Length: 464
Image (tube, rainbow, N blue to C red; front, top):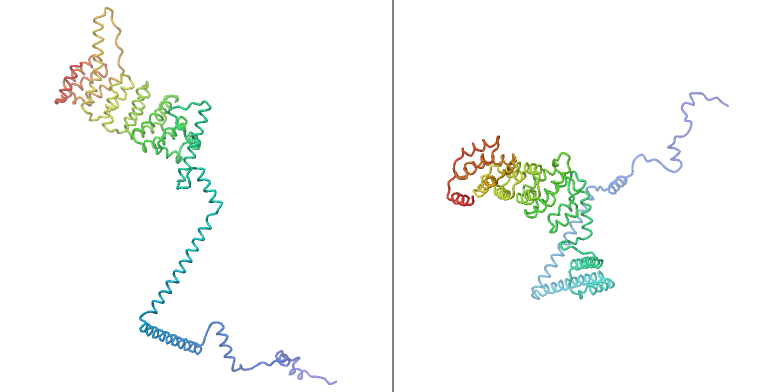
């Protein structure tokens, strides 16, 4: 074997290149693309959604030609229709309109049939029989009826049945009793439980509608107002006084507020009034007639203590009240029997410094002169009797303070004769600390001279 040099092996390849093996097995690589390769690229672009300029022009030309053909056909049809109209006098249009009307009628009949079928499907035979049976049982005879009336009739029948059962059992129904539905009683009993622990927040809606009910007093009794918290009393007073008229608000003030006022003072250790009840009294004065008729006058007529009168009068002193309401209330107080509690309210109303009418002023003069006449009668009894009579009890200091307030405020609104009678009353019912001040105020006043006052003065003198 001959030897192979390194120089000879450098120029030889160890194996065939890969492209030669592929071409020898069945394929040849093209050095230049075929002529149709451009067309294939174009078709590929068309598949992707892109068209070249030549294809776009051809498509537009074809669309234009089709549009022209359609336009020519429409022109031919319109020309033929005009000729037919001229020949038959518009008969063709009438025929077309008739055909359209027939189509509309057919369509409307089709709709009506559908509606009728739906209505028939809605009512079942069993439901109809049950409905007729119900009407026969209720005695309506199959005619028109009101479902609400039927329901109310059923409720009334049940209520009458309960009343009849109670009567049969021997339970006598009071004459002024009101039969409330059990659901109403249960609901307002729960509201009463809520109000027994109420401190703040919104009131229940069922309680807020109470003033709008006709029999609100009966429903209110179910809530047990004696167990309400003072906070609930204040909120309820605002609700009822603002939503009820004066006569109705008077009932609430007398039945609820007056009782809670007295109980609060009695139950407290230092005989003071709860702050929230005090606020409720101030709110009730926004209806002055309800306050005077429902609170002040009933309080005075029911053996009111001086403590209760002082607390109630402090409320009256802090709130502005119309003069007419105050003058009427003052007249009512002056006509009642003397008591220290009544005098407390009289003094507070005098110190409000109203421009009172002359009629009320004359009532005030008669009120203070009443004690002078009692003194004169006592003096005559002492002269006639052999033994000395017991001395008259001294008037309380509140009476002298009320007398001084009257002299300070109305010393220029009384007549000279009335002034003399009042000076005599001061002399007989003298108080060491207040009497001299009352005399000084009366002597410093000017006389009131009018025809009306003169006539009233004559009547007063004759009565005296």
